[in-house]
Image (cartoon, rainbow, N blue to C red; front, side, top):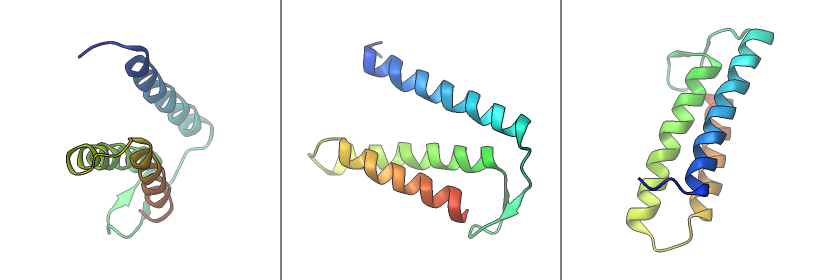
Length: 87
């Protein structure tokens, strides 16, 4: 994998998001809640589900469409919003 500025920015943003999630967990401890999946999830679980789903959305976008990746970014944002709201 080539370490370019966009690649470094991607991994830095993931690391920053994890740090923010850690600070939020320390400052505002969450409680488990049951959403549409029927399992108890915490804030970190929902973050992981949104990251995993976003990876699959981006892979599907690259494999099926010949369009700029910005559309996948928009779909990933909406997906993450839905995961944090209803899962």
